[in-house]
Length: 435
Image 1 (spheres, rainbow, N blue to C red):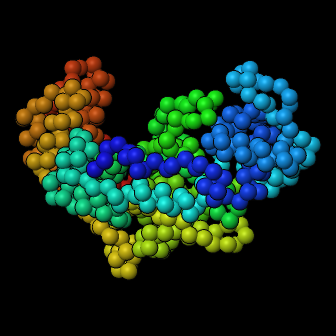
Image 2: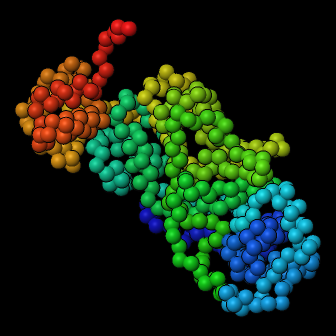
Image 3: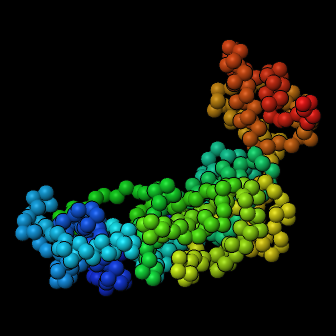
């Protein structure tokens, strides 16, 4: 697996206006809106705002001058290396205002959807191969049976959908995070994409973790940046949703005031992971959510709609992980289960793994182990719950004992009496409440 972005991943800079593959009118409008909104007046400043090479920006400026939308101010900007400054003419200002009335979007020039699709293929999550050693390291301190790693590894490398199910408290969410860590490398995320003259913003600092890159010299006509600046180099994204997930969150988000679109969650997670945690706790039924994913899961493409009603396809290159505490047969029909490629049971630990987890947590938290107390826990307490172990229980019990010790003003210690007090807080007593 590549732990660094390979040069092939980096989108190449456009070298001419033809390389942009955008409508000329759109590019001119974004140029004028950006100069109007950001008050930038030199070619280098405009190029930085548009995330374009200076030569292409100069072409746009020259065309706008020819159409009398821009004019040179006749002064050189000392702050920008004695560059010529430009300003909007009355006609340019009028056109900028008309363009803003149609869409408030300005700034980085968008990437055409068909161009972005090619970039998605170059950095596809399905190109990643994960080994057992890499997955084991990514899981950190999680103690997992080898058989479980044997199921997870092929699922991750396939880049297909995964359903993790099993009783609560056994680390399904932590395993999902470990899968993200196993990916390890980087991709390029577009700031915005364009389809049918509409701009859709994709990069989201909440979802995407940008990798800092060296700044270019803004005064250089030959920029050092190898990658297209309309993209941002990021870690592979991870989108995590839970009970709040609704079907409308999977549609384009339209801002009627700004008249702009924002990408839905699954498009933002392109090249990364989309985790649906606590499946079955959403307002919509799990069956309805899976029905929405049928086309993306089977055909690696999603269908989105504009306000006009026009539908269009976008790439779906996402490892979808569903996590639930319900048995799959309780929430899905057989057709839905068939469309989920990997179904992996995340069960509670064996007694041996439970003890390993208990010892690991105790060491981390500074709690001395006591053999007599551990025997008491295993022989007296766990038989009352049919010896059902869960991964969360060692942390819970040790945290409870620490709280008790601190309250009582005694050194950290483990005794059967303290185990009894901690155990009482782990479960709710099955008794009636007299009102």
